[in-house]
Image (tube, rainbow, N blue to C red):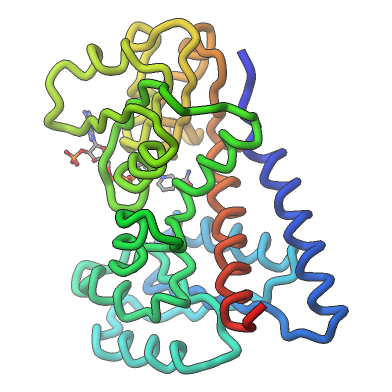
Length: 282
Ligand code: NAP
């Protein structure tokens, strides 16, 4: 079994990105800039934001947090975003999810200029992905593809089973795998006999949000496992995969933490850099 070490790979890629940004700064270019918007004080969001800002700073991206009270109105938030859209020094705007219930998430995400949509959640960017056009991809699916590439895992022809069909993980990763010529099956909460599908899978992407959901009896020997889940279980972070038991059958497997999580942050920073290059005509 080979551990897909997302932390190690993300550090390597972050260093490569830092080198590119250092060169820009030496050439007197402006610094790439990311704005993170947080509404309220969700503890999980606090920790994700902390990691995004810390890693941005490490690679030379100027990242700032704009934090608003839980009761901000939709109109106020939309106004703030439209001002950020107009500011030419800003390359990316990220609205940390989840938002409080009274805010229309789709409307807020689509109010971001799609050329500042560093998360790749804008309807236009999702549409580009589904038209196989050059686009900013959602960071988690992009990070997963980067991780597979770094380990030289070819997905062409593999039976890939994606468990989960969310707009931010399951659905876009399915399309990216399809574009790489995998044969993709998308499973969800209404799938009948999930085990039948997972047992036949060469590659499983688990993006469910249920701790230790995928068990050893559900997979075949030699399977490649990508565990996207982040769940808190008895004060520990665990994935959607019963790692300790499934790893005995897997050929490759990601750990949680230190697997997909850091690759997601790296892909986000790489997205910001791609947007910066577009803005600077580089
Ligand atoms: P989500 O929007 O809640 O989607 C969960 C998906 O799992 C849904 O499509 C749901 O099916 C499916 N599902 C639920 N129960 C199921 C069951 N019993 N059998 C089969 N499918 C089932 O979650 P998400 O945003 O995609 O996130 C999934 C997990 O990944 C969460 O733990 C989240 O914290 C984590 N995550 C991690 C990262 C990272 O960087 N590592 C990034 C994003 C998310 P239906 O569509 O039928 O409801």
